[in-house]
Amino acid sequence: MVLNLSKVIELIVKEKGLRQEDLVQVVEAAVQSAAKKVYGDYDNIEAQYNPDIDEVEVFQFKVIAEKVDDPNTQISLTSARVLDPNCQIGDELGEKLDASRLGRIAAQSAKQVIVQKVKEAERDAVYNEFIDRKGELISGFVHRFDKRDAIVNLGKAEAILRDKEMIPGETLRRGDRIQALILDVTKSLRIPQIELSRTHPRFLVKLYELEVPEVTEGIVEIVTVAREPGIRAKIAVRSHDSKVDPVGTCVGVKGARVQNVIQELKGERQDIIIWSEDPVRFVCNALSPARVSKVIVDKAAWSMDVVVADDQLSLAIGRKGQNVRLVAKLTGWKIDVSSELSEEVVSSELVQDPVSITTMEEIDGSLAEALIEAGYKTREDLSKATEEELIEFEGIDESLAKKLIEKAMVGEGEA
Image 1: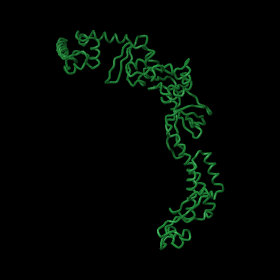
Image 2: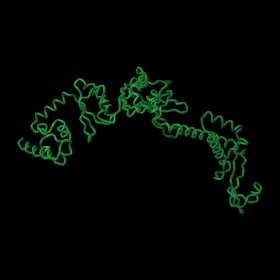
Image 3: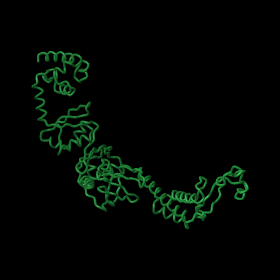
C-alpha cells in the first residue's frame, strides 16, 4: 500500500482545505473499490484505515455457520476459531485480506477513485462554505472571461459575474479587484456555481454597511433601496437614536462615505432620504429636492397624484422619468406627478361644467376632492348613490346625504 499514507493525507488536506476525516473516508472507499475488483464485488468487503500501522486494511466479513454454502459470505466454526477462539455460530467475523494482491491495475483504479472522490469532497466543501453566505459582500479578482461573463477568483473557489449583473458601462479587465454580492450558490456536476451581482439593491446596502459603522451596529437602518444601476439610486434610512442624523451619518464628513460608495458603483448618484411611516410624507421626502404642493391619495389603487410648482415639475419627474420611477420603486406607490398649472386647468374645467358636483354649494373643496376620487364626478353619479354610501365620507351625515341625493336628482333633471 501507499507509504507514509498519513503524510499524503495531511498534504492533501492542507492543499485542498478538506477535513482529514473526509479524506480518510475517500481513501477507504478507493481501496475498497480496488479490493472488490480483485476479490469480487461483494457487499461484505470493507476497507478501514489503521493509523497505528499507517495502512488501509481490507476485511471480508463472513457469518460463522455450521455448514458453509457460500464461502464468500460464510465461514466454518473451525476456521473462524483460528482467528477468534471465542467466536460462536451466527457471529460475524472480519477476515483480513492480503492487500498486496491488489496489484498495479487495482492500484490505478484506487488512484482514479481517490482523485474523483477528492474532487467531490472539494466540491462539497466549497458548496458548504458558501451556501450560507448568500447575500454577503465578497471580494475577488477577475481571473478570466467566458464570453461576456467574468470569472472571479475568490481564493478557495471561482465565481461567475454574469454580464447582466455587471453595472452598465463598467469595463472589467483581468486582474481587477472587485466587490460583489453573493447572489446564489447551486450544486453542479463539476463545481458549485457561485453567482455574483453588482446590480442587486442589496449590494448597495452591503456597501453602506462597509462604509458606515452605524449601519452595521444597527443605530442607522437602511429600510429600503431602489436602483437604476450605474445611474442613480435612492436609499431610505431611519435612525434608532434620536441624537443621530441618519442622512448625515451615511453621507459622512465632507461626503467621504457616500463618495466611496459612488466610486465603487462607477459614479452611480445616491439620494439618501428619511424614511417615514406616513406614506405621503415618505413620498414627499423621496421626491426631494422637488417641493410638493399637494398630494391626493387613492388607497384602493395604491396610487398618489402629486402636485408640484410649475418650476419643480421637471425636477420631480427627472430625466426620462427616472426620478419619479425610482420614487415609485422605493415607496411601493404608483406616482403621478403634475404641475399646479395643469391642476388649475382641470379644476377650472370642473367648475365650469354645470353637471359637476363642484357646482353644488353644499360640497366644499376637500369633500368634492374625496367624492371625485371615489367616482362621484357629476350630479348624475351622485343621484345614483345611496345614503349609506355617502355617509361613509367624512363631513356627510344622514341629513346631508339625503339632501345631496335629492338636489343631485333635481339638478340632473334640469340639466
